[in-house]
Each structure stands twice: as C-alpha cells, then as structure tokens.
Image (cartoon, rainbow, N blue to C red; front, side, top):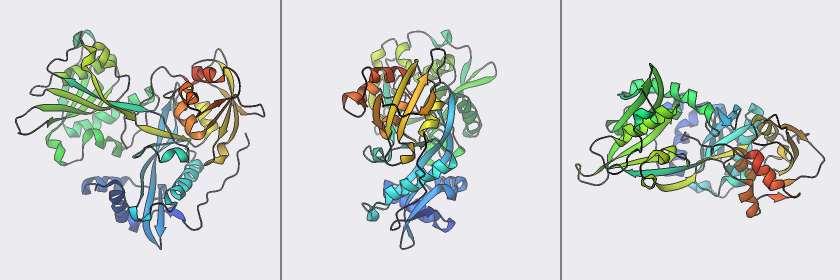
Length: 421
C-alpha cells in the first residue's frame, strides 16, 4: 500500500506544541480540574521526574496552557509473537472552560502524527468516558472484571499444595519495589494486551511512598526453589464503622508466572484472618480461580467493563506483527478517516503451516469493510468480528468472510491489561 503523505499539522486556530518546563505546575492543575481530583505532591514529583516534555502535547489560549495529551514509550504484547512498539497515552485533559472548541481533536491529531513519526505502531489508553475516543480510531480491546468472594464460605476444591511446593511470604515495600518489576518483566510478554512498564506504572501495586494507605497495604511473593514466581499487593480495609467491624481484603494487583504461584497466592489471600470478604478489582474476565473453588458460584462478578482501548497507528505493521489462529486469504477494506495513511485494502495471506500473515496492498475487492475503531477492537482477539457484523459495525462483501475473519483473529485467551494508567 502506498500510504498517503500526511504531514504533522494542527488547526491554525488551535495550534499544538510540546509542553514547556515552566508549564509543569499548570499541567497538574489542568489534570486536576478535568478529572476532579488532585494528585498528591509525592505523585506529582514522581511524574515530573519521569516526564519527557517532547511527548506532552500542549494546547494554549492566548499563551496560557488549557489542554494536554501525553504519551510514554512502551511495548504491547500481541497474539503469539511478543511485543510491538506502543505508546501509553495519559493525561488527556482540557479545562472545563475550554471544552467544545476542538482542542481535544487538535491534541489527538498532533499526538497521533507524533507517534507515527516515532515508529510506535499502537497507541493505548484507558478511557474516562466511553463515547470519546472511537471517533479518533480507538476501540475497546481488553476487558476486566471485579470479583468478590465471601471468605467465610469460599474454599478451594483441592489444596494449594497439590499445585505448589513453594511458599508465600510477606515482604516490605522496598523489597517489593525490586521484586515486582522482575516478576512482571517475565509476565507481560505472555498475554496479549499486556504492556511493558516503566517505574511509575507500579504505583497501583506499590502505593505512593509515604502515602496514607501504606499503613494498610501489604505485599506477598511466592517463592519456589529460590525463585520468585508471583506477587500480590493488597489492603485490609473496614467495610463499615466501627473500626472493629467487618473487614475485607482488597487486592490491588496479582501477577503469577506459573499455575502453582497463581493458586498459592489466591489460597494465601483467602486465608487472611479477621476478614470476611475478598475483592479483586480489574481482573481477567476468564479468572481461572473460579474453576478451583469448591462452589464456583462463590466467585461473584460485581463489575465487567472495558479497560484498555487501542489505536492502530501503523496498520500494516500491526497486521504483520501478530499470529493468526487459522489459515486464510482475506482482504480488509479499511476506512481510517483520522489517520488516512492507513486507509486502503490490505490482503492477509496466512498459510496452513504458518501463523503469521503476508500483508500487502491490493486492488482486489475487499472481503470485509470496516473502520479503524472496529479493527482496533478485533485486533487482539477480544472482540469477535461476528458480534460487530451483527450490529453493522463491519460489513462483508463476500460470503463467509466474517466467519473466516473470526477464525483468523481468534485468540486462545481473552486479551488482558494488568496496568492502570
């Protein structure tokens, strides 16, 4: 495909350029005003230390900062083949006084052009509202659930020692700050949708250094044969007053490299004394512990929603980067109005003995017509083309094309993103 030569331009009325150092304090003020909460000074200092001003797009009104959109370099795991260069998009915010002026669109235009120039094939974000980012080509790609267990009755059908010969032990925050990244580094390439992390991305698990919640936060690791294979970060919190009333275990993050470490960590959390409930937030929709409970109904799903939204910045690179579940010869007709360099017809040929696709431009009529947002949702295998076709989000041009696409883009496990950002 001969991509259209689209230069990095923004509206002459609403120009966008990188953030300046003298605007950092205002950057945090805009974030607080847009999201309705202020970060602690400690978190602001950590973010400032990690900032790359060239990656923070800034919108100004008469010289005053009024909107931002930042990104951090990362890699995202795709089905079967490891990671592709990605950007974690954060701090997308416009002051309430400057909404409905086209500033978000200008920021997205500038940022996606910038990511293309950097060679980052995918942009990833978590959306505060579900109706914002589809028009910029983002699609819901990973999903997560919140689970609750009544610890007074929930029991494993088989003892953890049947799976694991190691042990779970508690550690302090300093040790966890070293152990968690090492374990996560081995984990993230193993599941589609996961992201390579920077230091700031462990705050959800570790908590803010010196923060108020550290008095209630605990860190556990699973160790076997002098090797750490998993970790859990959790709090013990009151469910209702008074202070000696019922308490729950609130799991902030659980990461396991082996079935043994996974079962052992869940068994440990279920065994914490003086608590009546366990709540695990933002967990996989296929949480496996359900199938080891003596009564699977005890694992109650209290919330199910989207987590990571992705945007294919370089469609051809992304299509070549993943493995496909079945052989096929399929032409995708892509309409990408916001990043027109992607628009066109892509032929995917996956051989019987392969799994990767030969991707090329073609004059052949498309078998399936779709837009950038739909392709983003389908890409990791978390959304079925059949479901999108049922509601007219994608349209077949040849018989059997949707079924063939569903088979090709299927994934063994639903994609998942453990990272909060």
